[in-house]
Amino acid sequence: MVRPLLDTHGRVHRDLRVSLTDKCNLRCTYCMPAEGLPWLPKDELLSTPELLTLVEAAVTAGISEVRLTGGEPLVRPDVVEIVGAIAAMEGPQGRPEVSMTTNGLGLTKTASALADAGLARVNVSLDTLSPERFHEITRRDRFDEVVAGMAAAHDAGLRPVKVNSVLQRDINDDEAVDLVRWAVEHEYELRFIEQMPLDGGHTWQRTEMITGAEILGQLRTAFDLSEVPGRGAAPAERFFIDGGPATVGVIGSVTMPFCGSCDRLRLTADGQLRNCLFAQGETDLRAPLRAGASEAEIHDLVHECLSLKLPGHGINEPGFLQPPRPMSAIGG
Ligand code: SAM
Ligand code: SF4
Image (cartoon, rainbow, N blue to C red; front, top):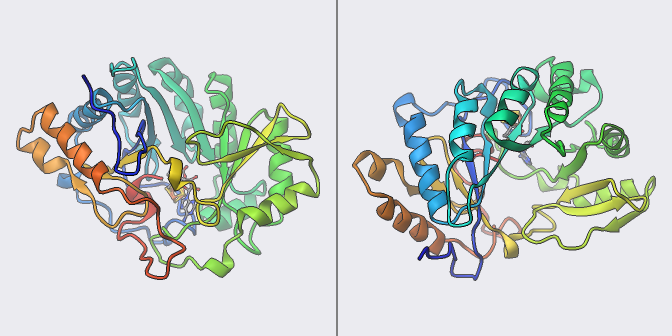
């Protein structure tokens, strides 16, 4: 009998975010400095067999959704094989659903192979419809490749393609309505994410952040929004646009936290298990794995990590400290 992945606050965990690498081929200003970050040392990174052993232990412990992320997951050369191996795993509720968050670069080449390997869906990040602004935000001139990658994912059946957008003041905060219109036209589902204090450069400022309420205010000038019922553990609060069926989501991690229903754990590319994006501590799975730990011992470590999970992320509390790892090394 499998123990439910229950924490001390009554939350059952079903979702594992797996970072395949901390490296990336873009340099989004809210995520990384222009020169990149000190990358994780090679000998500390999980090999593919190690990564799959840990993901399988999580799946047999009760994880039913696995989202591959990073850094940029598509820069890992064997990403298609990794998707195939995870999609074929068996947990107590059957095979896990495998999805991916990506910046879209390279999707034109890999979307159908990923779909064939068992990938269910993708979230592609795009913050602007202007190639010039894209260059300014990501520090790379690759807008067309991202847009083509989204189309390739849609054509490969990775639907609905979800689009993640971060709005920044005086940079792209005038684009909320246009981004939604564009996404609806392409049958993509847009989700705005509030900018969080997780950037490698530690430049986040609360006063500069575009809040979920501001975004909804802008959208209501152009659309009639009605809440989609049954949010469950989903981070996005979703709204029907002009009666539906198209929807838009707002992930108000800072101003509208959804910690009470959080069902997520995170595995970093160097084998550390985290119970929250903002956790200060981590549970090392790599060293025990390399020392020959059994699956039952890994299960115990997963439960230990869960038992330490706090009720909330604490961003809005006076003593809040940004975690030592940036978003790109945690797996967003
Ligand atoms: N490279 C992939 C991508 O960009 O989609 C996956 C990793 S990225 C860290 C995952 C998501 O986190 C992206 O949608 C990105 O826009 C978002 N993100 C990165 N830094 C963020 C921050 N400081 N606040 C809010 N979202 C952030
Ligand atoms: Fe790379 Fe994603 Fe971070 Fe942008 S948000 S720098 S694409 S990891």
